[in-house]
Image (tube, rainbow, N blue to C red; front, top):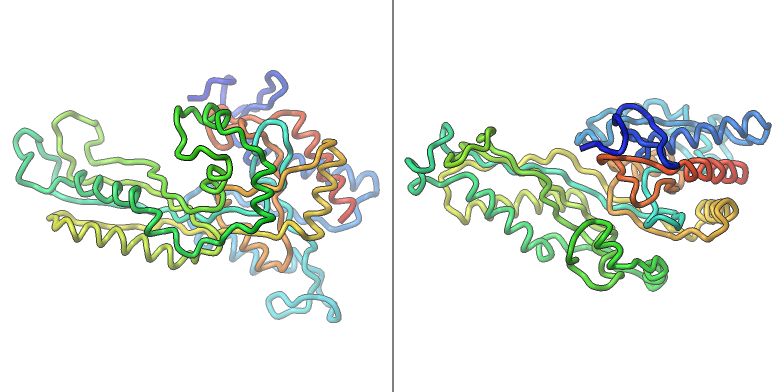
Length: 378
């Protein structure tokens, strides 16, 4: 479906934008950060050590512990710390160290096209598969349709239950919005009609901007991402022997990841048992990534706020993000003992890891300036 440029695998410049796979998430922001550090080093203004940590499997669908990042960081804490100082340093892995002063990440996008943002929260996610297996082979619907329990019937019933009962099942333990946070949501001033047009839908679930932002940022949601079956040719009048759905549950502060995972498995199994089906059910939890939530009233956010304001000439918005970033942010904060913040560089319409992914060249250049300013003032 790539149509904006000749190839997703070749960087191309068109009408003030760079187009290419991964250019906004996350190659462009990485390049901006590298050039910011390079310029400071060459000018003699680089006053702190900068450690770049690259991880390329966040979109793999594998959990953060399984894909190797955690082990590498834990086994090489010396990369990120200054050792041998006992008076003021924090202990990491049993050693006296000075931990990093900050963890800077640029993985998200602005809320719209014109207003820079600072991200202080992300939802967690649990990716899972529901597999229903029935007859030993695909069957002809005209010959065998009727007496057997068809796998798709069971799967559809489970998916309907997940969708229709999600608020009752998965809404417990949600952190309530404080008055200051409600003010931050209101300051976004989301235009609901423009948002609906941008995502290409005629009607949204909610009418108010507050409800829309809450449902995207600070409430759990269930998304049915794909459905497949053993009828791979999608032939008519064929009953598949098995079918599978891939589903994502995004959960929020202060919900417990293990508790949400148990609820998923228990809920699906209970609904399947109620059907008294002759088919077989399997629920596979593919990966769990935890949520992240920071206090924006801290020195690191204040510094970043001022850097963005100096470079762009406007005050940035404090926003949250519906995605999870693979659980990397809370892991790094906990392991390295340092505060994290996300500084988005891309605009809302840049199609991060989608077809026709792009980033405005102006955003890359200004983003580099923001990072330069922040690094100089850390």
